[in-house]
Length: 572
Image (cartoon, rainbow, N blue to C red; front, side, top):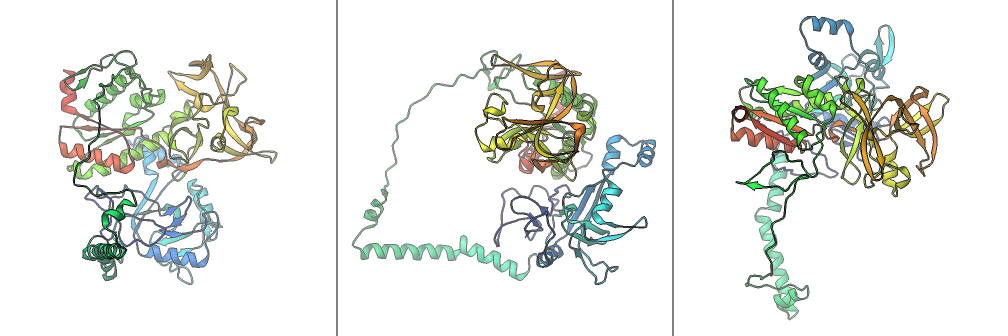
């Protein structure tokens, strides 16, 4: 968009695009809006240019189109260093840096970049075919760009066959490029303005009105020529024009009886009495993040979070033990403490940073909580039918924002018995990995857990770490109960792809040479956080409205807004 509104990808040319409430922030160059320029999926593309596949290098013509598209825009470059530097980390700790600050320093960001020619190349070029094609000297050896990032930074490129582009900082893989919200180089030129005006004139201006008038005149003339009236013609379609209002019969229904699980809900002065009430079908709060706009009330904010979670548990809301541990011991790692002077204008930036913090802690396990407790982060994602489905994020943690998922393959059934599956969709969801054994055999498999109490392998979605011990679901007589178990390790249950009721083999973790995820998606496609807690100093309506708007517009996140002065008054 000419004023720097949004990045639009379509199959055909669009003369004008509009999105209600798109302008969420006065800061059009908000660098927290990370939209990759390399989009993979059903219709992969780079900077809006369609490509055949991300698995093979682009042809010369497509390379030229990508180069022209990149030349018109500015972009940001971002990547995260995976390989740790022990000496550097030690030096940062000596300077008083926290572990979270050390982790954050590994994220490299170069803002407001544009492609440029590499004067060291002959001929001078701005883009090269792939990260596997370009070699250079590093530590006295010839190395490709993809090998360089793996050896130096521990980054396994997700798309090594995709192009690399040159900016003033050097050469970077296309997957590191993200859109910078800014006007394009040809924004608001004469041709673009004429296109917008022509679109308006054809869809809402005088030309449209005149077209409607002409079509109406033509239609009436044709009806009269046929010896008919407008009413008789409409009657062919069982339509009629009437000035009389339509009368419908209706009845007043009884007020529905709202019940909690343990008692009937009582409405008093417009509010429900929630004391000691347990919700009938409580939701699960798998993750949360905090935005504290009341910067002078940090202790009050922490107190509110602990109180809210405790009350939620009392109402029957399920909160995983790991999530409670984050609240007790690592709250600063999921809290954005706003320190600016214009909270309404900066709300989008603050909420965006909070979401990124949540992804680091829960999805990417930056605190090693899930790895340390031999547990997986459970949450929800969307399946092929755009329905929410339970899933678990698989180890090891992701690189470059992609995650592997283990899905609830039998969502519509009361059991996770593979024999109960009746559709191909559920069958596809059963597998979590494609593994290669050390003997060279390859299998489709699902990750399972071994415990000491039984030889039956436990599904990770039926397993959890709670209150310092591991638990698994025991099903008996139609009931489900969590029982204490002892964790041994992970294994892979290999089944027939045409009939998942047939177990082909069980492969131990140490016998796997390599694996890939069956369900590999971007981390923003996973529900995280489940809730954004926004802590405000007062009842300022402008800030309330802005936070509600941006949390919904960024990704449909649920938000809970609390006011410091109200919470402190209620405590007293």
